[in-house]
Picture 1 (cartoon, helix red, strand yellow):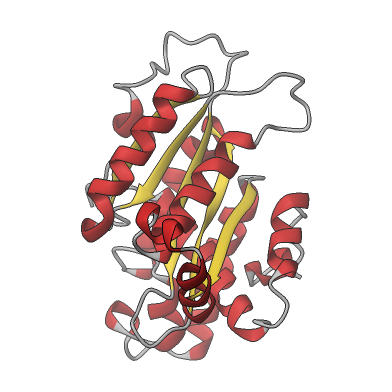
Picture 2 (cartoon, helix red, strand yellow):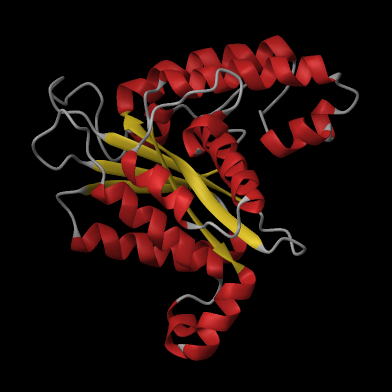
Length: 252
């Protein structure tokens, strides 16, 4: 199977071979969940980790895909037995989720996520119409929030701000606005943001890890919609993963 590795995707922005080994770029990958029309909750979530962590993830992730005979680990499809997962037993689905969850945990990455209720969004933008002029859709607002959180992140071991590169799953209907917004961030914070890109889950494997985080964040938000602050608190403190099979332990 052919896919775009992180190195192929980003070498045009930063050279892996020329950079000092002491200088590491943090890379964040984001996907969305809950964007279907009948969902009140919309989530954008993902992970940020050093580039070497993502480079180490790729061959292991591809090996997992090959083992299960699938092109991509799509969390909601796996849970529901859709598409490539049709006919799978619960045992097989659990095995796949366990394997890929463990790989996500191995990155040591920090979860970054943002969520919004469509009903709340409509209420707020009705009272503050200028907000909807800037962000036409709630997912645009989430894109901006995740971009900001990625740029605010740094490892606890680092005393100085670290360079960050961000990749989002391509969403054609929002791409023009997202590209403009990302470009503005790049111009405003050139010392922090060293690249941004958009890709598909099948070709950029870490986006499949981001999909797992986004889906778990979505499920968590649906379950506790009355307690929005809980997810934000989890994100801010960067808690460690606790469950071996589900990423939900990070969100509790």
